[in-house]
Amino acid sequence: MSVRFARRFRTLGALATLVLAGLAFAPETLAADVTDIGFVDQAQIASMPAFVATNRDLGAYKAKLDKQFAAQMRGVRDPNVQARIAQEFQNKLLLRQRDLLGPLLQRAQVAIAAVASSKNLSVVVDKRIVILGGQDVTRSVIDLLNGPGDPVPPVSTPPPSNVGFVDQQQIDQIPKMKAANDQFLKFENDQQTAAQQKLRGAKSDADRQQILRDMRKTITDKQKDLIGPLVDQTRDVIASVAKKRGLLLVIDRADLIYGGTDITSDVTAALK
Image: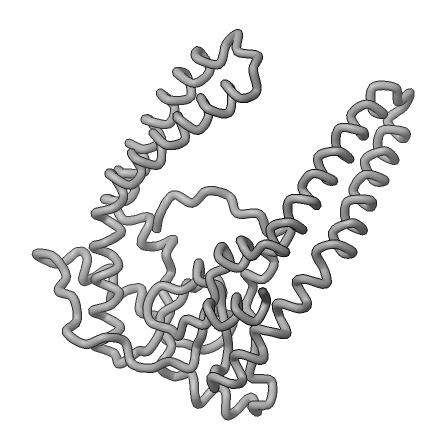
C-alpha cells in the first residue's frame, strides 16, 4: 500500500517471518480457531489509480531530489557533512511521502477496519504471509474505497484475537540486540572492504569468484555465531509469551493491518 524502504532481514530482522507459537494445537483445531482471520492483498490496493498516481508523483519528486543531492554532494569530502546532507534529503523525501500518501493510507486503513468489523474479523494480515486459510477481504475493501464518500470507521474496537504480533523494530533496539547488530554490520563492512582490496590483485575470474565465495562464507559464519543465538533466544521468548497469552500464532507488526494482540512489551521485558 505504501512506498516501503528496504528492510534488513540479514540480522535480527529474520524474526519478521511467521512464528507458529501454538505447537501443541492439532492442525484441525488450529484451522477451526482461525476462521476470524482475514487478509488483504496490498499489491492490489496499491494498483488502484489513486495510489498509482500518487506513487508516480512521489517518484518524480525523488528524481528531482536525487539531482539536487548529487549537485550538493559534489566536492564534499567531509564524512560528517556528507551524512548531514544525506539526512536532510532523506527527511525531505519522508515528509513528501507522508504528505502525499498519508491521506490515502488513512482512508484505506479505515476501509479495512470497516470491512473487518462487518465480517466479525479479529485480525487482518498482509496476504504475503498467508499460505493456507483465512478470508480474503481485498475485493470488499477495494469496493468500499471506490464507493461514494469516505469509508466510515467502525464504532467498535477489534475483538480479542488469538493472533499476536511483535514490533521487530522495538526488539532490535534492545541494547544487547543493537550491540550485536552493530558489531555484525561493522564486521560485514570490514570483510567487504578487505575483499575489494583482494579483488584488485586477482589475476583471473576464478580467483575473483573464490574471493567472493570466501567473503560470503566468512560473513555467514559470523552471522550464525553472533546473531544466531539471539534469534533463537527471541523465538523461544516469543513462543513462551504466546503460550501464556493463549495465542495460536505470532507475526511481525509490519505484516499486521488490523487487530491482533500486541505482545511486544512482554517480549522486550523478557529479553532485557
